[in-house]
Image (cartoon, rainbow, N blue to C red; front, side, top):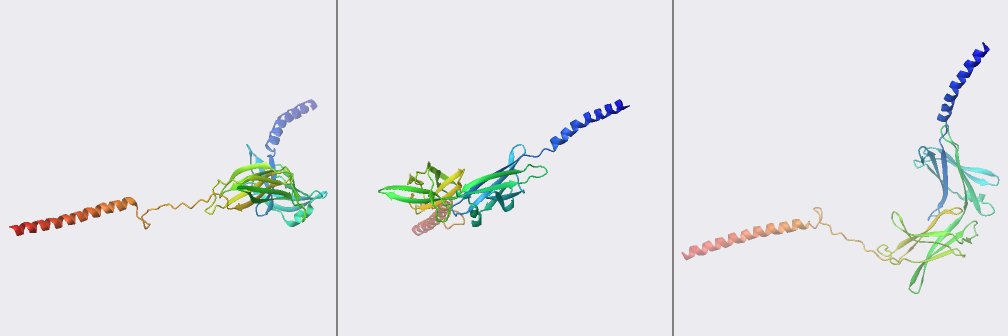
Length: 287
């Protein structure tokens, strides 16, 4: 009897284990990924942009999920804010002045962005270290040559400014909707980059052009942008397009020509009728 029970139990386990494996496979959590970067724009607006992704066939934006922003303080971390990701999977935290009080002795700030996960998705986190820096764009001229000068420097304290050497800076002409690259090089030991000004590039009607300098995706400084304006470009006059429409004071040319032909024909017939009347009268007088 005991032997029979053992056989039945063994058979039940054999049948149950594959089902358990299938259940475990179905319950597998979706993989997630957290991305984060520091940005400092032309207006001096500093922010941490986090992006949460979830993997289906590929990684896609994970919208409407709560993420937490932390700043490191000694051996602990302090919650800055909890935010919900948008349709792009992004959440943006704007840095406050009080956040910079947590700089370490090297002038760096350490941030962490976390997602706690859910019943169907794994948790995710991203750490970034940032050192505050700025760019300054200026222009100068030597004889007939014109130049763009960019200075890169750290601003880890109120009165502390340290030049940044050997950092790559991209120079662009800022358009209405995009940027046009004109140069990319590294700064010298004084934190400066000098390149010739593109005098052949078109500007506005006064020759004013906007030059943008960028540090992009740097491991320590993140993304920094600064602009400078100068009237050294080629002036481009506004194009005056000749418009001729039914609603304009100038009629379309085909209509003008048609009217001239029609009126000429009418006056020709008037003149011809008058000519015939005079000719008939003369003929009558002669009779």
